[in-house]
Image (tube, rainbow, N blue to C red; front, side, top):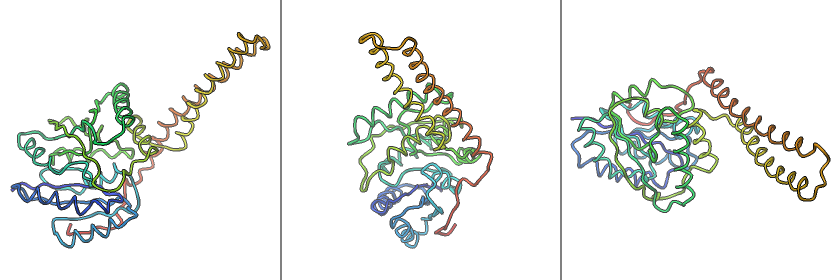
Length: 309
């Protein structure tokens, strides 16, 4: 009988874990597969670890890796994929916005010969217009800038054949944008579309700051906050220079009270200064990425393991 491994990153999901476990196990109990369930706790501050320990005690198919601190969603997924050993591995979030009811469809497409089955989120119920718009613009932008096509609406809810998982493990860069890395593997891919339901409980852990970092990581493959500040300052100065430029034109051509040469000098200094800071910030992003890679630090550290493996 084929064996399926589930990888579920967890960060402060105490209100969702039991419901997620129950719904997933109900679905898998009706399918002709053996399975195991690997939770990766990404430094949760609530009682998630306590609930995971309870699930491990009550079900020998469950195990949990408790990371030593919060490393981020992408590295928590990486940890789970490093330890998953099923014939196929399904990664999904534990907040139930990745519906467990789609699992039979993923398995069916895998049985049909597809080595990666990628889910495509068409929309999320009750999500704001601004978030939908910014997401669409982001995927458009990253696909213009990247040589690897990033599927709009692609999520980290996917099935990977063990062969694809082993190939993914060869990618050890620190700045991880897994949706892009998966598209570089080159295996046979099938897609499943779905509408994400609202979270079962709790609130999204992706703040605006985290979303901005995640977006920039997708473009530069790494996040280095101090160097990003230079980039943000450059953009801010560039915008301010445009506003000041309007004032310069007003003084020069409307009230005609400008010192000769002042308008040209002021506009040039402000605009070019802003552009230079933007350029320095962009260079800093890539230099910072190289700096982190050459240090060769571990991607993550497991503080504690719960379960048999």
